[in-house]
Image 1 (cartoon, helix red, strand yellow):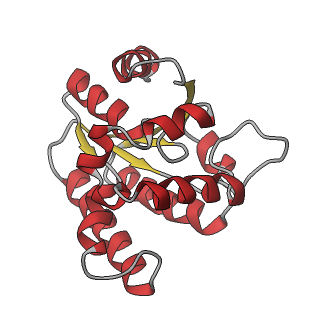
Image 2 (cartoon, helix red, strand yellow):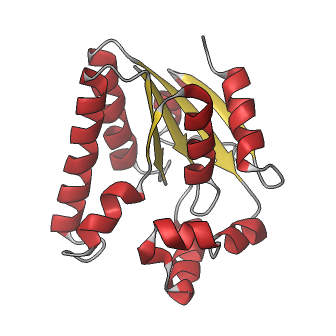
Length: 193
């Protein structure tokens, strides 16, 4: 199975680009909020039960996808590249796929902050991610994550995630001015065969 991990900061377009990539490839999409939203109905964001359940759900979906006859799975996530625990978690997903004969490819999206703030309130995003409907909270969360974490490569210092990323294929795309279809087409052209 091909395991395409699309990462980047909030509202950069991971889900919409992933949807378009799946249309082109026949892969299945497992976007971050497919695990987050059901658990938020029971446990608050960031609580220990929330973290355990979301991570276990993600792990199980990736295990089942890797065991099935799926051609590929596109997984999207906001990834704190400077956090060792985030690199370890993503690495554990990569290990699941590798242990079943699959391979991983990382796609990194980045876009200007003003564009991401605009995308943060689009109709599609709010429809698919109910927890983002409180726009004041969602905008503040986006800005807080930008302030507190490294979510894109290319900075001045090396981050924990770079070792993992460099062991696999990696494509970095500025999609500030690209449509999801244009970004997906670029990914498809650059994907290892």
